[in-house]
Length: 118
Image 1: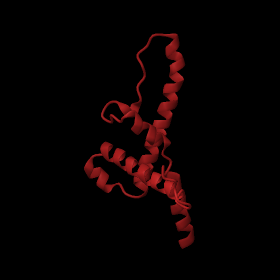
Image 2 (image 1 turned 45 degrees about the vertical axis):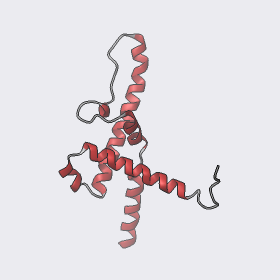
Image 3 (image 1 turned 90 degrees about the vertical axis):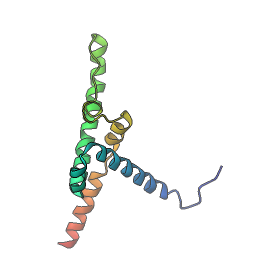
Image 4 (image 1 turned 45 degrees about the horizontal axis):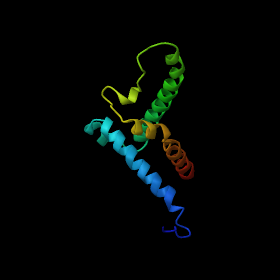
């Protein structure tokens, strides 16, 4: 088994972050029509990603809260908004959107750059 060299462990978060961003871009591209996707750049893209992340987290919370209610009565199982209808995201994609939190970093970085240029 190969041991990582000293100083290379700091590369892992960067490569993992890049891999996560790549997956998130693929997810967004699968949802948005191609013409609209071409116009979504910069903050608009990250705002949309942030909104999807909020939806994914709120849906996960709603579904987990409804599990107790389902035990008491026989009902149709609840579905995640992002995984049915026209979106049809896989559970893994919904989970990744829920865990993604790259918008606040980007926003704070752009705010820092704005402060420096003013």
